[in-house]
Length: 375
Image (cartoon, rainbow, N blue to C red):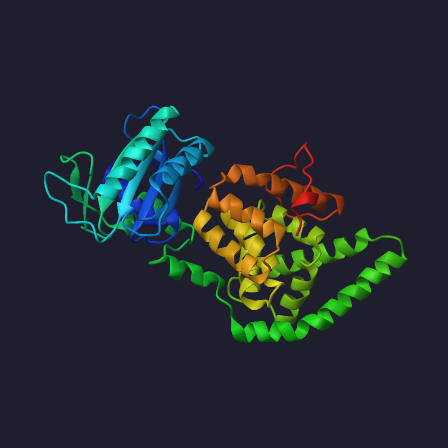
């Protein structure tokens, strides 16, 4: 998440979890990695949140695995502490003194011990059966700390997401619907792909004959950029246009340039295009669009959304190398700033082709090599 607002108390933290994840968790353990705000004793900022299965589930990470995961991500996020939030409707209703399920208690003990051995700390633990207005919450480690939740839709992070048009979904399945296949549109585009590929081959052959193969890549990138620039939130590109873009993205040089678009003024339009293509393309072409879609989510720190897009990409092409690498980044909560080298590489490649991506960040002084990252 980019520059999230500070969180002042446990209730605010708990109701902010749905906005952090992009959906409202249930039967989940959420690890929240926090930093203390400079000059403020209570306010915390939240650079990262990760969901795992509830300790009450049969199939879940072991206590040791959760502790190692927390420590690794704490380092990656440069966080000062980890907060554990258990959301599970099977928990007993809170009472004073508060009790907690032994399985949750063992997780907290493992977290506390492992983090302490690395100079980190478990900053707190909180429980709620559900995250809704007026639901009870409690601290399993401190019987004196309990209360009722405010409206999750009014949390500072939720309000920020609403302001920028980012919805919070009721469930993970609802969130995952953004990559559902549009069967009718897919059939239309699939019928056009052979002719679009044939036209592309003719253009490539011409550039080879004149001894300027870069001219082909330049033309394909230019055409994709024209589609992105013309994209409107109120319209969907024609099936022929989608087929043309899909064929262009088969060239990994073209696809890699598109990573640079995510850092510029056309990022939102590009992401909408990748979303439409992910829903509209047959396999394996769908993998390229879904990979780019995952990258945009990673760049915002939205690991859950990125993971869903990666799953779609690998379902379309299980051998897709870049999707696999982005899947690792999503699973390990790689900080967004580490992903920006792909943006710089795309920007630099576009500069060589003399094409402006509308990039918002300057070119890197260090050339990154993606040869080993291509499909």
